[in-house]
Amino acid sequence: MAVREIIQVGHPVLRQPARALAPTELASAEIQQLIIDMRETMRAAPGVGLAAPQIAESLQLVVIEDPKAFHEGFSAEQLAARERTPVDFHVLVNPKLTLIGDEKVMHFEGCLSFASFSMVVSRHRKVRVDALDEHGQPVSRTAVGWYARILQHEVDHLHGTVCCDRMDPRTLTTPDNYANYYGGKTVAEAKAIIGKPGA
Ligand code: ZN
Image (cartoon, rainbow, N blue to C red; front, side, top):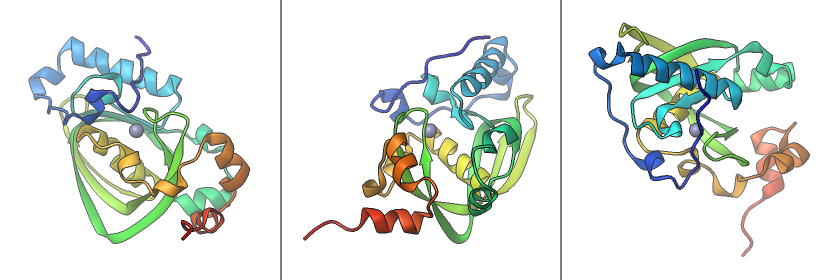
């Protein structure tokens, strides 16, 4: 078990399409150890998701976990606005994402590979993911709200996309400024504070 280094934006691996894993490869001790390392790295960060390219392994492998303990710093209103509910630890191998409907939602989000910043990203409210689990068994999950956001963010990493590619660039903020100016506010309120570019 090892906590691995999380690479930061600018590292070329974060821009490469990750390769799919063969089911036989998935059963190997090496990949099973990698999954354990990813789980420990995500928990140590801490984060709610980690894609293998974030530890410089260009493989289609994602771990996700959004435990209830992470929700303690948020009000019931904030959790409801994000449709954020606990998600148990799970592994997705070779995930295929299907966007469901046209409804999109904007929230501030962050990335362990774009540390020290948050930004508003528009994401689909609802998605479906089809993947293999860590045992090579097919899994299909439908997700709404924050879990759908996590899935879109992590699967993006497997295609060389980082959340800053999708952000509203004027909303980029450090964590301190997020807490000071936008933390308790809706995205619409935050955007009103930020305003539009001057003439
Ligand atoms: Zn990320």
